[in-house]
Image 1 (spheres, rainbow, N blue to C red):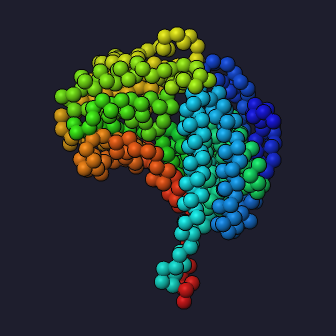
Image 2: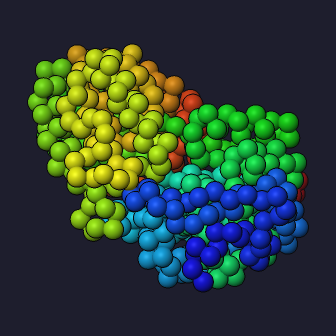
Image 3: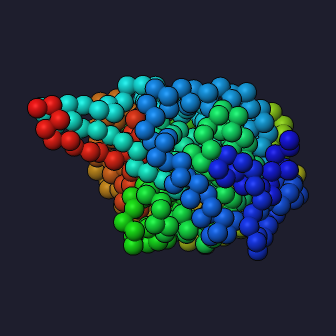
Length: 478
């Protein structure tokens, strides 16, 4: 069955079902062509209730299954996931405009490596341990609501579903209504893997309808949310009356400090690539680059040349490096912030307003580099979520660190330079994760933010902990 035929359905209690009375639909657009590929059903609070109650009914039996059985289930999920890899790649390329090569090699890959990391972590997780005569038991927190974004669909779905499943939770997933195709395929994967009825449920919808119901429902024990800081605040407010756990991965404005000891060309080019990857639509993208003032002009030249070399265009072309941003609204927001950067006096080094030359449709943005950016400028403070890099000069490492930390966000940080100095700088950054000299992605490192970038941590055992309650049974070993 084509995934497009699933757009009008939800996955509840082990079956594909239609929405309840009064349902509405929303068009799903291909952002590269601006063509409508289908209409997704937008669930209501009543649809969310059906899924929540199915998850609640399934919880008692599933939560007490031995960890070995839950891990075996995750392994079956991974097997089916890999068999659907190309379907997922094509879906994400259509729904969010990811270049097909990037969709295969990064977007689909991310889901697989997080499944593998969660399985490995679950096999050695301390589900029970005896401390003296007290047994420490880690058990499923309960029914969880999972709200995921459109920018890394499989990464974010797997980073919530896999640890929740490993912990013995039952769940309701609300993927982004903007990019619902891959989420529906993932539900087919869960069904084909034999996940018991009610353990995994999917309801498409928007924040005010399904999202707020998952956040506020008394039968939901935890909400795990990835998205904007603005929406995260609403989730926390809705969850507060029932005192449910809320884990959030929110916005970012990550700093990339290039030290004088760094190879300037490699560091700047790597920073441009990291910022522009996924069309700049990553919450931890290094969108603020700090360079020594003495080499700022050289850095701007390197960055401008690199940005001009990036190939923007048709996501179906394997040679394309950067696709469109996800929607017209996102395109217009980015254009407005580029205009603000120009108006506030930043130097436009590359890119700028409007679509790249030769592209007359689709939500394509020019890879844009600003220089001489000052800390008070809008483009230095607001999350743009597009291929826009702000380069800022500094006179001392202390000043660079102070400017890097001068943000409401604290998700990611980056440092380039001689390893001893880079380690010292990394320790001073107030962020949940710091990357030194562009390392390989570590799926066992904790991922999450400080300050308004959220709370909780994802990846491997860090994610499993978030979906567990900890119980102490005193006298157990007497």
